[in-house]
Image 1 (cartoon, rainbow, N blue to C red):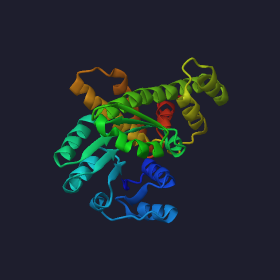
Image 2: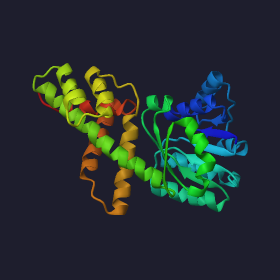
Image 3: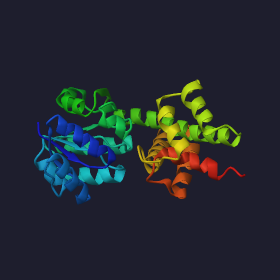
Length: 288
């Protein structure tokens, strides 16, 4: 099957690279032409200037976009072309929005899956990220080999929207956990511990140590906020969780607090940088 890709951001670029290595990617599109041109130079994959052109020349279309608005506008723009096509949306958006879009695709003769990713761009590059899939189970076998080319960890969760709900479970925990790491790190430093001592506790000795503490605490220690997952995206995901929680009538007090921390980090100028930069709000607002 011919595979097309819409969206060449941090994650989309790596998805595309993995598909190229598997010999599957035939065409790409990105809203800003410069990224598409760069991808073309690096991988010799042709690019087009509209998302509709991707659909016309592909059997399976993968989208990796920034938010609900971007996914909605893209899906609505290609509805006239989706008959007989399969859409795999790997963006992290509202499950409610995704279900609405999948229904529209189905009404127009196509099939849509949600397939969000757990893991950083580094893990995705190494094919070690996790892909959580929601959509019609009877069609899953048709896309399995494509997703396997992107990452070796592919899990079918359930019907449309379920992959996204599973992803939000992860990001709820992740957002709260990294803000707690930032608070704990700052507490240790202000108490007089050396950076290396606090890092050793959080990474090696703590009963709450994890792969995330191994990844994010060194960034906090070195004030290295080069982006693995941007603060603005964590804030966006926690906002999605809040909206979904309201519909589900679920209390999420820890999410509410963590969301404010990431908003504060954005206000301090860390929006485009890694969300581990949340530690900076604890440092800034702890009086000397």
